[in-house]
Image 1 (cartoon, rainbow, N blue to C red):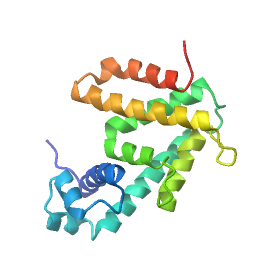
Image 2: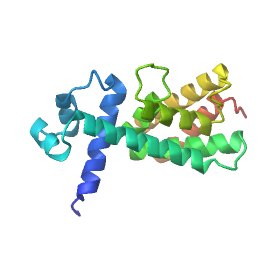
Image 3: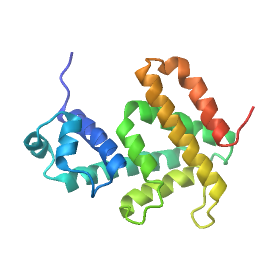
Image 4: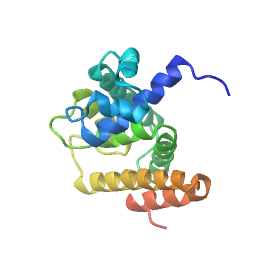
Length: 184
């Protein structure tokens, strides 16, 4: 098996740290919690990332990159079933590829006033990708997007544990589309 590159190792660390930040927030996450999550000693983690802030910045940057990509991917597609399906498929793939980053991105949709401005920007980009205008907030649509994406992530994690990704994929997508209001 080929050895991982430094970039691949760092990306894995950032993804796992993102999951911890999503669960506890920056303030309530310790460097030791992250080290435990990634299987490093605290000193080993500090060798790769100089401090918790640097690691958090990398997590925020990755969440912003992902949400901006989603927004770009939907440019030119009118809001509706096709756009929602494209977004949900991309989020499902991201959840399987980078589960921590996906969870962190979902946390960015929170209305927490203490959110980092860049993380908030990632949340706004994700909301805009789903056709939510930040200046004319739609409570029902926002609730549906949160329910669809959170449910999708929970189901994706269960599918992974059950080793049923391929079998569950169409069902996960159908359930998320239903949550968005696209019923058969």
